[in-house]
Length: 82
Image (tube, rainbow, N blue to C red; front, side):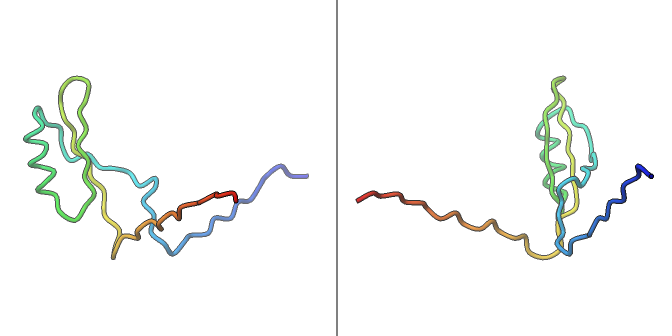
């Protein structure tokens, strides 16, 4: 008897970015210089983070092709008792 397990992973046609790694674009000493780098990057997701030592890091990752899907609106639930 074997104790191995086979796992089958199906790839979805939808593009998801959960788990997509961020690439480091640079480390800056001021927010103004980090913000200038952020504004120069076009067509990618960009985030600026402040470190505990006072420096700022700029990270980026690619954007999904096509239009981003909006989240469906939540309907209000009403519970009136007569």
